[in-house]
Image 1 (cartoon, rainbow, N blue to C red):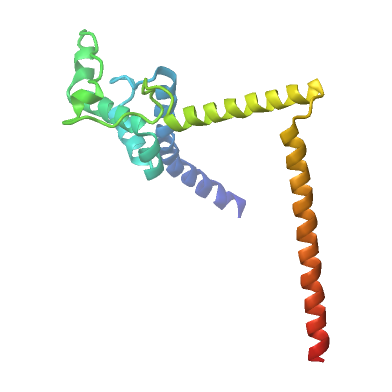
Image 2 (cartoon, helix red, strand yellow):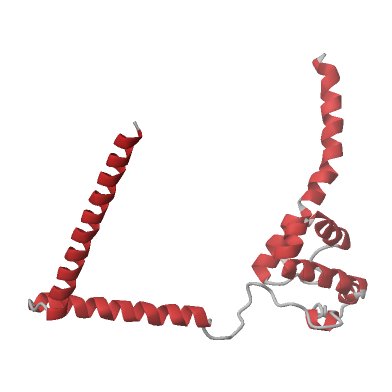
Length: 185
Protein backbone atom coordinates (compact mmCIF):
# COMPACT_ATOMS: atom_id res chain seq x y z
CA UNK A 1 0.00 0.00 0.00
CA UNK A 2 2.76 2.46 0.95
CA UNK A 3 4.72 1.55 -2.19
CA UNK A 4 1.78 2.71 -4.31
CA UNK A 5 1.48 6.02 -2.42
CA UNK A 6 5.12 7.05 -2.90
CA UNK A 7 4.90 7.50 -6.72
CA UNK A 8 1.54 9.25 -6.30
CA UNK A 9 3.03 11.66 -3.74
CA UNK A 10 6.03 12.29 -6.00
CA UNK A 11 3.78 13.04 -8.96
CA UNK A 12 1.67 15.43 -6.89
CA UNK A 13 4.83 17.11 -5.64
CA UNK A 14 6.08 17.62 -9.20
CA UNK A 15 2.73 19.07 -10.23
CA UNK A 16 2.82 21.47 -7.28
CA UNK A 17 6.29 22.86 -8.17
CA UNK A 18 5.14 25.23 -10.95
CA UNK A 19 2.27 26.42 -8.77
CA UNK A 20 4.61 27.28 -5.90
CA UNK A 21 7.04 28.99 -8.26
CA UNK A 22 4.31 31.18 -9.72
CA UNK A 23 2.74 31.77 -6.31
CA UNK A 24 6.13 32.98 -5.15
CA UNK A 25 6.45 35.47 -8.03
CA UNK A 26 4.46 38.23 -6.32
CA UNK A 27 6.48 37.93 -3.13
CA UNK A 28 9.76 38.06 -5.11
CA UNK A 29 8.68 41.15 -7.02
CA UNK A 30 7.29 42.79 -3.87
CA UNK A 31 10.55 42.17 -1.99
CA UNK A 32 12.56 43.70 -4.82
CA UNK A 33 10.22 46.69 -4.97
CA UNK A 34 10.38 47.35 -1.24
CA UNK A 35 14.18 47.01 -1.25
CA UNK A 36 14.94 49.23 -4.26
CA UNK A 37 11.81 51.37 -4.51
CA UNK A 38 11.44 50.33 -8.13
CA UNK A 39 11.47 47.22 -10.30
CA UNK A 40 14.35 47.21 -12.74
CA UNK A 41 13.30 46.31 -16.26
CA UNK A 42 15.55 43.25 -16.68
CA UNK A 43 15.59 42.06 -13.08
CA UNK A 44 12.77 39.53 -13.61
CA UNK A 45 11.61 37.54 -16.59
CA UNK A 46 8.43 38.50 -18.38
CA UNK A 47 6.85 35.27 -17.11
CA UNK A 48 7.66 36.17 -13.49
CA UNK A 49 6.34 39.71 -13.89
CA UNK A 50 3.19 38.45 -15.60
CA UNK A 51 2.64 35.88 -12.85
CA UNK A 52 3.08 38.59 -10.22
CA UNK A 53 0.55 40.80 -12.01
CA UNK A 54 -1.93 37.91 -12.15
CA UNK A 55 -1.45 37.12 -8.44
CA UNK A 56 -2.34 40.62 -7.32
CA UNK A 57 -5.85 40.78 -5.96
CA UNK A 58 -8.16 43.78 -5.91
CA UNK A 59 -6.93 44.80 -2.46
CA UNK A 60 -3.34 45.00 -3.70
CA UNK A 61 -4.40 46.88 -6.81
CA UNK A 62 -6.33 49.42 -4.78
CA UNK A 63 -3.96 50.04 -1.89
CA UNK A 64 -0.59 49.26 -3.48
CA UNK A 65 -1.16 50.97 -6.80
CA UNK A 66 2.46 52.08 -6.97
CA UNK A 67 3.58 48.41 -6.94
CA UNK A 68 1.07 47.60 -9.68
CA UNK A 69 2.33 50.52 -11.75
CA UNK A 70 5.95 49.45 -11.23
CA UNK A 71 5.16 45.91 -12.44
CA UNK A 72 3.39 47.30 -15.50
CA UNK A 73 6.31 49.67 -16.22
CA UNK A 74 8.79 46.77 -16.02
CA UNK A 75 6.61 44.70 -18.36
CA UNK A 76 6.38 47.57 -20.84
CA UNK A 77 10.14 48.12 -20.71
CA UNK A 78 10.72 44.41 -21.37
CA UNK A 79 8.21 44.52 -24.23
CA UNK A 80 10.02 47.54 -25.69
CA UNK A 81 13.19 45.43 -25.92
CA UNK A 82 15.25 47.08 -23.20
CA UNK A 83 16.47 43.69 -21.95
CA UNK A 84 17.65 42.63 -25.43
CA UNK A 85 19.64 45.85 -25.76
CA UNK A 86 21.28 45.12 -22.41
CA UNK A 87 22.24 41.60 -23.49
CA UNK A 88 24.01 42.97 -26.63
CA UNK A 89 26.35 45.10 -24.56
CA UNK A 90 24.31 48.29 -24.40
CA UNK A 91 23.55 49.70 -21.00
CA UNK A 92 20.08 48.86 -19.79
CA UNK A 93 17.73 51.78 -19.84
CA UNK A 94 15.67 52.67 -16.87
CA UNK A 95 11.96 51.92 -17.01
CA UNK A 96 9.93 54.89 -18.16
CA UNK A 97 8.43 56.99 -15.43
CA UNK A 98 4.74 56.69 -14.65
CA UNK A 99 3.78 60.12 -16.01
CA UNK A 100 5.45 59.18 -19.29
CA UNK A 101 3.40 56.00 -19.44
CA UNK A 102 0.04 57.50 -18.67
CA UNK A 103 -1.94 59.60 -21.08
CA UNK A 104 -3.05 61.93 -18.28
CA UNK A 105 -1.95 62.62 -14.77
CA UNK A 106 -1.76 59.57 -12.53
CA UNK A 107 -3.03 59.72 -8.98
CA UNK A 108 -0.33 60.11 -6.36
CA UNK A 109 0.62 57.31 -4.05
CA UNK A 110 -1.30 57.40 -0.76
CA UNK A 111 2.00 57.32 1.12
CA UNK A 112 3.65 60.13 -0.85
CA UNK A 113 4.24 63.45 0.86
CA UNK A 114 2.13 66.32 -0.41
CA UNK A 115 4.28 69.16 0.89
CA UNK A 116 1.27 71.02 2.25
CA UNK A 117 0.99 72.38 5.76
CA UNK A 118 -1.14 71.15 8.63
CA UNK A 119 -4.86 70.74 7.96
CA UNK A 120 -7.11 73.47 9.39
CA UNK A 121 -9.00 71.21 11.85
CA UNK A 122 -5.73 70.15 13.47
CA UNK A 123 -4.63 73.77 13.81
CA UNK A 124 -7.99 74.70 15.39
CA UNK A 125 -7.77 71.76 17.82
CA UNK A 126 -4.21 72.75 18.76
CA UNK A 127 -5.31 76.34 19.50
CA UNK A 128 -8.29 75.11 21.56
CA UNK A 129 -6.01 72.77 23.51
CA UNK A 130 -3.57 75.60 24.16
CA UNK A 131 -6.38 77.80 25.47
CA UNK A 132 -7.56 75.00 27.80
CA UNK A 133 -4.04 74.42 29.12
CA UNK A 134 -3.51 78.14 29.75
CA UNK A 135 -6.89 78.38 31.51
CA UNK A 136 -6.07 75.41 33.73
CA UNK A 137 -2.67 76.89 34.55
CA UNK A 138 -4.25 80.24 35.44
CA UNK A 139 -6.84 78.51 37.65
CA UNK A 140 -4.10 76.53 39.37
CA UNK A 141 -2.12 79.70 40.05
CA UNK A 142 -5.18 81.40 41.56
CA UNK A 143 -5.81 78.40 43.83
CA UNK A 144 -2.17 78.24 44.87
CA UNK A 145 -2.19 81.91 45.81
CA UNK A 146 -4.99 81.20 48.28
CA UNK A 147 -7.28 83.93 47.04
CA UNK A 148 -10.91 83.13 46.40
CA UNK A 149 -12.55 85.60 44.01
CA UNK A 150 -15.95 86.93 45.03
CA UNK A 151 -17.65 85.61 41.89
CA UNK A 152 -16.57 82.04 42.81
CA UNK A 153 -18.25 82.32 46.21
CA UNK A 154 -21.39 83.70 44.56
CA UNK A 155 -21.39 80.92 41.99
CA UNK A 156 -21.00 78.29 44.72
CA UNK A 157 -23.90 79.83 46.70
CA UNK A 158 -26.15 79.91 43.61
CA UNK A 159 -25.43 76.29 42.67
CA UNK A 160 -26.10 75.11 46.24
CA UNK A 161 -29.42 77.03 46.31
CA UNK A 162 -30.44 75.58 42.92
CA UNK A 163 -29.69 72.05 44.12
CA UNK A 164 -31.74 72.62 47.29
CA UNK A 165 -34.73 73.99 45.32
CA UNK A 166 -34.56 71.10 42.86
CA UNK A 167 -34.57 68.63 45.75
CA UNK A 168 -37.65 70.31 47.24
CA UNK A 169 -39.49 70.21 43.90
CA UNK A 170 -38.66 66.52 43.49
CA UNK A 171 -39.91 65.71 46.99
CA UNK A 172 -43.17 67.60 46.34
CA UNK A 173 -43.70 65.67 43.11
CA UNK A 174 -43.17 62.34 44.85
CA UNK A 175 -45.64 63.35 47.61
CA UNK A 176 -48.31 64.21 45.02
CA UNK A 177 -47.78 60.88 43.27
CA UNK A 178 -48.17 58.99 46.55
CA UNK A 179 -51.37 60.87 47.38
CA UNK A 180 -52.74 60.14 43.90
CA UNK A 181 -52.04 56.42 44.31
CA UNK A 182 -53.90 56.33 47.64
CA UNK A 183 -57.02 57.88 46.05
CA UNK A 184 -57.06 55.39 43.20
CA UNK A 185 -57.25 52.39 45.56
